[in-house]
Image (cartoon, rainbow, N blue to C red; front, side):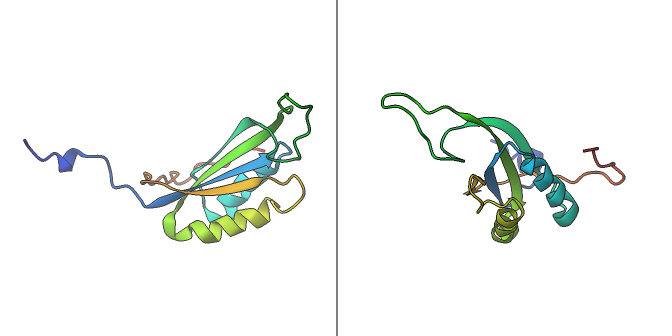
Length: 126
């Protein structure tokens, strides 16, 4: 058996994943823009999700599921040594502490491939 270490995947960074559930009020877009401009974070994504009782008190009749609401799930991949500070920064910037402001999770990743945007790539229009 031969060693194919030269042909293996590129070096993976030690990273963490921050998941944020936000109300569907534009906070996700403002957060992504701020992360890119103020912190240089490019490994971030947002998708629509259905949320139940994540952003508000779940009220329903006995034996029935509560109605879901539209929310946004934002995922941010960050270097392990920057995760704690960025978690606190996002908490403040997204106003998670406001009523219905959302919730956050921090997870360990096995690793992530570094991603840098090429020089001169223009920002998207809002």
